[in-house]
Length: 531
Image 1 (cartoon, helix red, strand yellow):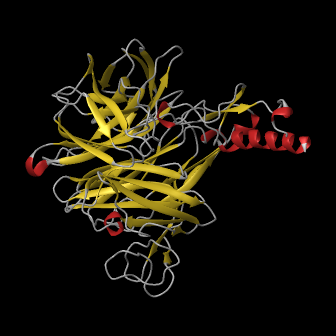
Image 2 (cartoon, rainbow, N blue to C red):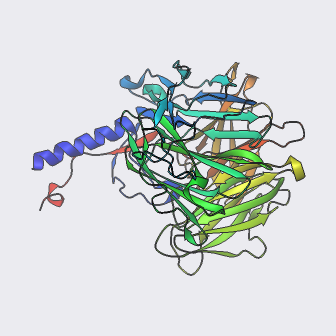
Image 3 (tube, rainbow, N blue to C red):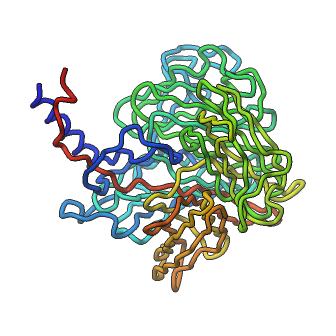
């Protein structure tokens, strides 16, 4: 028995080093469920990403940018590496509608039950099976573009030298129609649970959650919507959704409920397997963008990167635990933390959402929202997201900012342009200044890396034009690295690419890339593991 335990412990350590699935801290800065007391920090040797289908619009142009930071891996077994994405199939019923509940053989005629009405769901094969944005070297971005309305979802992996910090940015410019504007997303790593505060089933909004399975076995997923009065999902409406191997399933959220609600929260739970998930929101008046998953629920949350010229900001928070949450709401500004007028404390009921219109909260100065437990000792977990509008009248454009994880060792965001990129760094804790090294990579078409160090005073927000590579040609990546002794820091990147009079923009959080893991020492006191 003791020998078996030793073998399993060593195997678990080796698996963590190979796959990079060991976590040092819970998302959102919370304590880890299991934190090794000692061990060796090693780079991950394999990373997996999924990118949802970008757009079905005939007037959309999508750019993919792949990047891996240099110098991320050491050791003889990581001198080389590969990184590429492959097109995935799409599950659709015989009417071309997104598929949903696996195992059913009919629709109810109201759009709820989303499997094929003439048999099992069909997997629509991608038109092109060539690798997309194959990366050959670290430190230089690679790009690819498509204007096809049938562009598929992508799945793929990186290994060896290219695995730690591998990132792919998907940026889509939609010229007209519902969802017009700029839609950006950092392709997501697969997981088994996701929260999306800020989704909507209201009239005028069309929100799809894209569920993409990168693996060779089916995944089974449950979807649950929550609103200000609790559960919105009708009985069985979002349960047992089968996502076949190497396939994506888009699900229209309004088919999960008969209630039209703005400011809802979507909870995605994977029963078996794993998936990547992201929500694509389109509005007839305010354009569209991707809503990435928020940081896992925790007592505190930081939402970085509200632009200085935001004309309306809506906060949606959800308390998924068994207790109500009371949080203090503050805006981190360039000069310190301030409390929005009339909003000192936010009360979020257990299992429900709370929506607050913060209007033009930034008042001409870029900022970040900081949510912390109120003074009554509440530690109930929350997570949250912002819907941000720029522009006025018919020239409004929306983007989303979810709660994000801190940058502990390094974070990277790709597809920055010579004009239009803004980097936000926020140090949310008073008295704990953050010192951050920011590196602009070589350009995709040429140029040399440039590095600059920024200091962010504790309790403040710093929005800067990032450094530009020398002799830049094409787009480039930004890598953010807190320095030794730095206080906690969170980051986000805004990319603004105006379309005529439309202030088209998108905001991507820059969380820690988890490019390394702490592999615990295999030896231990076996008396603790035996009865």
